[in-house]
Length: 103
Image 1 (cartoon, rainbow, N blue to C red):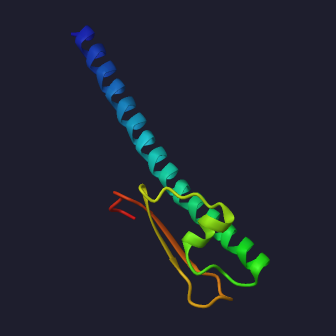
Image 2: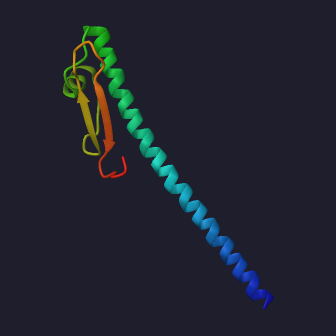
Image 3: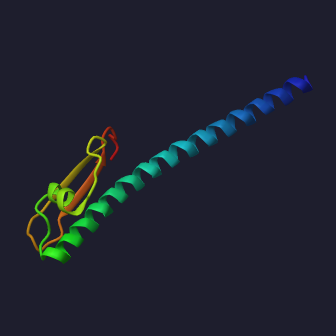
């Protein structure tokens, strides 16, 4: 009976460790996805500010930043919204990973 108890205790401990590890991996994946969208947003913002400092106005669209300032975006994996209200105001930039329903 002691052997069964030790075996069962070890099994429960192992299952608990697996659950803990699995939750850590899921959290790390979500953190990485969040950091990716922040990096893309920051890259777009940096290119827009560079354009503003050189030309005196923010670019009208992302295509201009891609063509003139070498901005490279993965539009297959992300929804990217760039909205310019006025040439002298920082544009609104939103980046979402495609397939993420929770963001």
